[in-house]
Length: 301
Image (tube, rainbow, N blue to C red; front, top):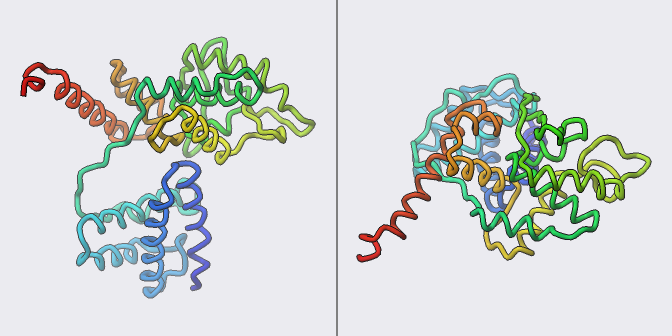
């Protein structure tokens, strides 16, 4: 067993965390160290690589962490679980070797979101009429309107978007298909991009991708991430705005407006309702903050 046998899949996973999940460099480095620590440990038990790692070997590593702080144990186990699910999703493994592992239970961290005012400023920052601005605005509107993952938005083709009826057909994790509505403002922005912006990007090699780069090919996840960051800076938003933050905002704002949790689950493409339920905690926190700020008995105090 060589370190490179573990490193290949780990490097692919870290790139996914950056481009798809938008995690910070510091978080990615923490995960790298945790998973490299795991690799070093299980290699001494005879594991050759991640794809043939046995659940019992992973369990031995988790048990070896018992002397560490609970928060450290939880983070390391989370890193391993997320990585195992990535390997299954990418079809590098057929099983989740962490399925039966357990660790200390900690309070779940709530996702950060943008306010509706911040979303408005973000999208308004791409208000120009030039082709690049039309593309950026359409992408931002669609991110927020439909709650797509960055990989899903980047992979869209013209055939997947039905502007007349107002929906987009998405192929998400595991190639699962779902239909997600497109709001009226996003439909207008997409119509302007397709009619007046996209033709300026078309080259001889262009195919049917919805969003194009300057070379006439489909826009990458890196470019979409950069577009979001650029317009967040222009809008003067201090938060670390990433494509996934717009997805969180989409779900939280729908719930605030009274949308059914099951409908939000379906639009997000979550396989389990428990994943979607985190947004009820976000909404609950918002209500507590509003109560503390505006209830007269709180103000008197």
